[in-house]
Length: 236
Image (cartoon, rainbow, N blue to C red; front, top):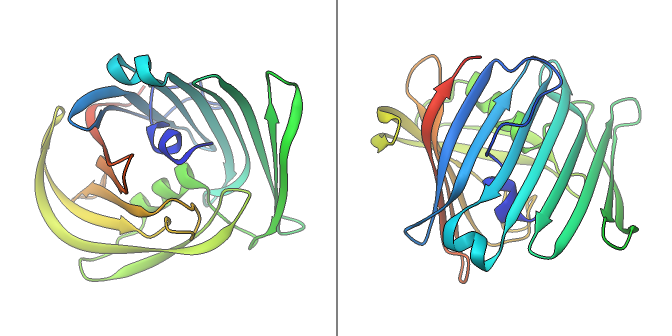
């Protein structure tokens, strides 16, 4: 899946394997225009994401992605599936996290040509997170301002101990309201997990719930800055 789609992939809630306990809806902004909507759903053992672009972005490059991950406690990924429609591309990417062999295996298929375009395998620890479970793990990990933590992450192509820095407290406003937050930077770009150059920031509420109310990608030209702001929080 493309990096932009990955972070857009906090969109219109896909049905999870178990009943969702959290549903977070985000608006997506790119270059000061509305670019889409995002809903992230978490259940007890799965998370699901669906991406759909909107407005001018859809006119230029329509994106409709559906992503789902299964995990064991404590957020140890076991499998993920990404079905993506990005422009004229149709791809399915399946990752299996084999906890008995400590290996992650990825297969990417071109659904239009009905062919395999990529296969990779990488060694991983017994418990590793992909991006959705890593966000959930960060919510459960109290990291004070000025401190950092490491999260073992893999996308099926690479593995790394991703450093997350708690940078400072900020009061921010989103469509869902005004929040006291802690800003974190996740150092997963620049070849650590994803090859694109840039920076990734997450704002979690400065309370026991630690809700991600803003996610921001600051990328090099031509992508620029992509911002996801919380619109609505639900507990179905």
